[in-house]
Amino acid sequence: MASIYSIVTYTRPSTDVSFYPASAEAIAESKRLEDAGLMERIKTSSKRLVTGQHTDDPLKYSFVTLFYTPEAYLDFKANTIMLAEADKRNAYNVENGITRSISVDVEYDSAEDPKINLDALTLPDD
Image (cartoon, rainbow, N blue to C red; front, side, top):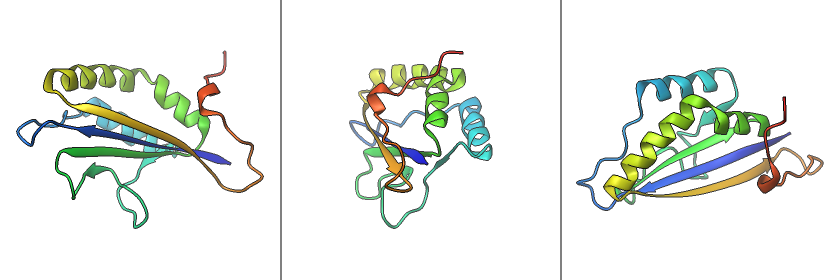
């Protein structure tokens, strides 16, 4: 089975500018999704970037998320709580000169896993 690995990095103009503080509702929703086994925020790793402020660059903060299935990734992207939080965060970032970069990759458990085209990945019609 394939997993989706997402890195979102925010860069602030100076340490005088605070990163956007996530709302309690968004934090609770993220925890609910983790507890449901749909995703996890990568907080420790010897091989890759982890969630949190960069130790080598205090102007950067990253959210590193592993979605266990493509469906979990799509559900997260369509989640109304997370979409509302993204709107608030984006407005805050524009007002404060914070930029964002996003990297999304597919990780395959085996060579036999069907290949996923991220650009074509969409929610199924109900």
